[in-house]
Image 1 (tube, rainbow, N blue to C red):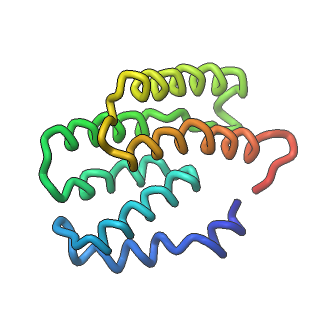
Image 2: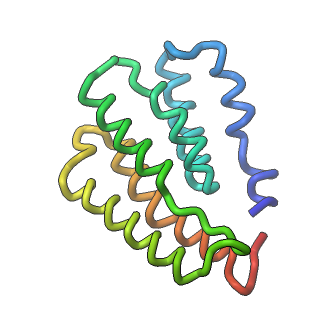
Length: 142
């Protein structure tokens, strides 16, 4: 995982490029911000990604702001596996409850109208679980 981050993660460089423009972003910078959010999510850095979500509401939409708050809450509450502190069974139980909450929000159309948030929810509960369990299983990938 570290190898992938070192060789394929340009999100920190891109974030430094758009920080001077915050909070108002042009279309290109907004696309870049979404890319950074997805990369952080795929790399398991959901709490960092959640902090960036608020800057995607360039239209200052109340509905979108509520959707972003729901997504940020999900991302901040995503269980984190800590090998020396968390039993795999406890992590799996917590993750299943969190995944169920993600699915409930998707099925209740909580993110209706935002393709990015729908995709982000799906990426969160499919890919990040696979990475978390793979990274900390007996045959460690790190």
